[in-house]
Image (cartoon, rainbow, N blue to C red; front, side, top):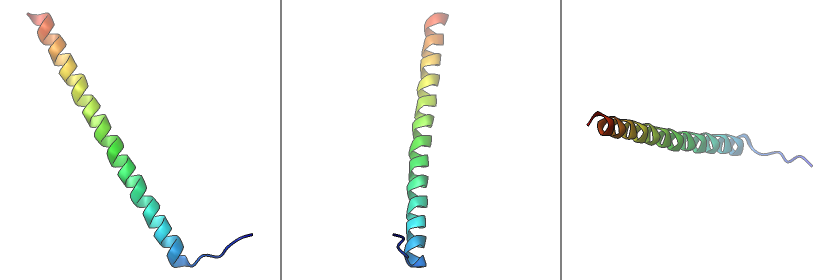
Length: 52
């Protein structure tokens, strides 16, 4: 059985999904940036340890 939803309801649902996707992408990007900083920190520490 197919239900007919008003276009307004579908548009609100679409907007809500877009907001959720944007929020997930922001969280993912923040995690990647944090990982990059950790990798640089480890590399600099290792370099400092070796150069002594």
